[in-house]
Image 1: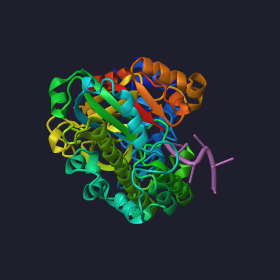
Image 2 (image 1 turned 120 degrees about the vertical axis):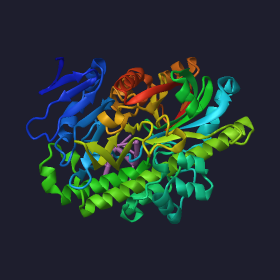
Image 3 (image 1 turned 60 degrees about the vertical axis):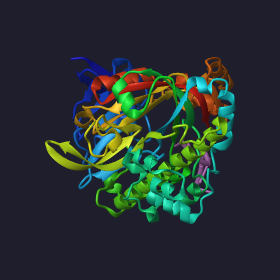
Image 4 (image 1 turned 90 degrees about the vertical axis):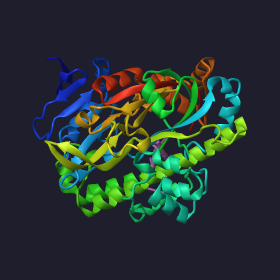
Length: 485
DNA sequence: ATGTCC
């Protein structure tokens, strides 16, 4: 059997692309990494594997702790990590969800082709950059008041439909219909609300972006057709999260959970994994608050979509409906959700923690929207400004092997600090421009931090997901215009 | 990711 050593940890390749850390010591379950050997070598370079093993200590964790092929280290728990934890007698861990709650991505389609856009790239990127708030700090598509913020927290995209920022098909093309009914805005800390109120409809910074792209390759014609995608079509990707609201909320609950549940904390190998026992007041309060932040992030992406449709109307001189600007789908990357999964032959309610991982439900599962029920949900996997991105389809094996999950992107290869040492923003921008990719950012440092070279090979991440049958490759898209913080 | 340290 092939083995792989990382520090004092030995992984065994139990089948192609599946590396297992056997259960030993205080581990409650084994851990598994989904990776090719070359991806595993990259994953092994930071604390990812150690963090994954630490996660197996969480009370109530079922089956195994998982790391997707794009995994890298995060706060306490890998980005690219998935854990299914018993919702009745397990726990919920904010670190296994992430600071940027419902960081996620959506794809908006158009009926434009690359030729329609040719020669207007500069005009379009300028107009988008001008119209869509980005970068650190405040300022959003709308200046929310208390009532609007609370409504957004409570009802997500449903509120956007009522207010005219969304149409009903936007709602039905989001994971969970863009709306977590378990949201409790009253348990969102006031300071988090204060930070979020003037950030409604803003990209933020870091790896968040809006990108205009063209469909470059179609790998699965029937599924592409079911998704309404075809070669040379112009599409738009919007990647952002819950801004300061999610970050503040996570910070405050982590502090409270560490304090109130120090006994549980003492059983864990890393303080950053702090968790609230299922059924405790804090678990309930945090879950409701997290659901509200999830709704907030969906509103955020919807408001940006609304503004993007206006920009396209201005640039192309037609109503957005005539430009075919429908939502393909919106997926969440950083969430926990009560889902029922098979555990030892028993349907069991779990808090499925996905941190930098995408739900990838296959055909037939009731959560998949009507429009895609017969093929499986769309999974959007952003690559980099250079390498392009993918649309996949929830795979037939995902429920058996990954709690219905797959990768969420290319995954970082190096830290932001290291990226800024390796790359210079203007050079990256010029090089991309030569390849007919138009990038505009608030800060040159952000372009350096997001240079194509800081990411793993997205083709390889997608290949591994496909070969595992957790997601099927549908199309590949290439960047045209990109705006970011 | 994040008013990158209240």
